Length: 83
Image (cartoon, rainbow, N blue to C red):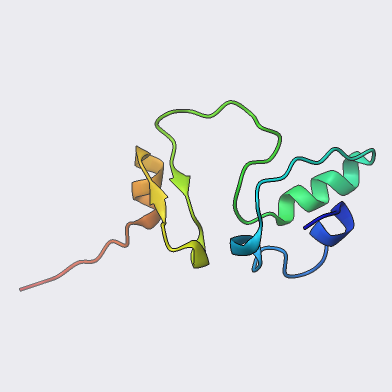
């Protein structure tokens, strides 16, 4: 995605596996927040990151979440087996 207008288009989340890291500044805060809410993977605003938090791919990236209890809980599917 080369512009914020492209980022705001439908389907940007489905194309995340094709995107590279980018930094963008935008003069219109409301539009920037709208785009940020549509991002399915990555980091928005570069806030500090907790080391026990998870990181990693989403959907088509195939890596999944790595490290941290949040990542384990997100990717764990609980099942009950009765014998």
